[in-house]
Each structure stands twice: as C-alpha cells, then as structure tokens.
Amino acid sequence: MINRISKLFGTNGVRGTFGTGLTLDFIVDFTYALASYYKNGPIIVGRDGRMSSQIISRIIRSTLNSGGLEVGYAGLIPTPCLQYAAKRLGYFGGVMVTASHNPPEYNMTEMEIEASSAMKRVRYNQVTELQRR
Image (cartoon, rainbow, N blue to C red):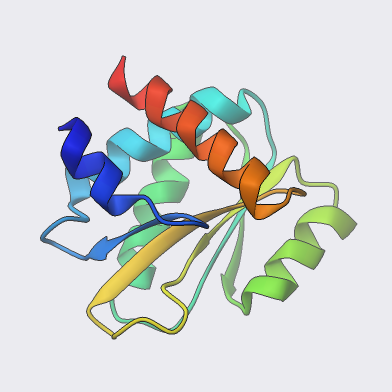
C-alpha cells in the first residue's frame, strides 16, 4: 500500500489512471485524510473537463461533507480561478480535480493552499500519514 501511494504522489498532487491506480476506494481514503488535515471548512472543489473529473469531484465533495466539512462546488473551472475563488470567497482551502498536461486517461487531485511546491509536498506527506492510520 505504501509503495502504491508513493507512486501516485507527484509534486503538486495525487496522479494516476482513473480506475487503475486512482481507484474509487483510494479517492475516498485520500479524501478522508484531506478532511482530517483541513479539520474545518469551508472547502471549495473544482474540476477540469476530463471525463473522469465529474465523478471524482462528486466523490471528493461527498467524502469531505461526510467528514464534517462544509463544501462549495465551483464546477468546471481553471485551476488559477479556483485558487482565486478560494482566497477571495473566504474558503479555508480547495481541491482541484485536474491532470493538467497529462494524457486524458490520467486524473489528479491538487490541494489548493497558499504554499510553495515544497510546502505542498510537506502537507501531502502529512495527509499520507493520516491516510495510513
């Protein structure tokens, strides 16, 4: 499990082929870990236009809500706009479902927080630790 998780974590998020490495169970487990990390909301969720993004964003929103967080939905939105909305509208953080420049079968979740890539990596490591428990 730990080796599988390390293969999914990239510089800015969790990336994998939807249905293979990035399974529904993994998305739910990872999102509960995110809920434990954030601890309180509200959190905003956005997505790109990939075929798998809509289902992944629904799972993330439902799981965050189940974890006790208030969740807003930005819908189909570019990542910079989600980052701006999170700050401007007073959200505690955000999750963007996108795989950016990767092939269409891939997808990814990114935590939208005010941090450098190095700090995001530290925070993802914290989320990974929460997920292992």
